Image (cartoon, rainbow, N blue to C red; front, side, top):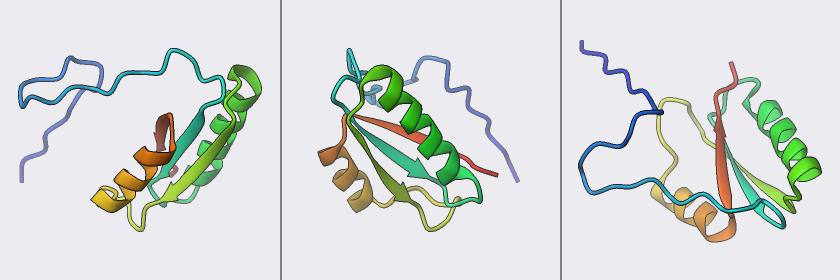
Length: 94
């Protein structure tokens, strides 16, 4: 079995994909929270969202809880979240 590690701080390579633009401000933003479904992910995300609401003026948050940490969110879940939020935060909550 081969394991590939990816450093998320490196520039994206090929494929024509690019990272989404970051909002200039979170003032009035709706935050999308993606929980991997593990024990503490929801708690971590809710705390981070509340901090961003209190300190950066975000308006609200929407939580998506994946059914399993082993699979990505479904395309339908991603599209629904993208239609309603300004920025997305994902958490692993072991």
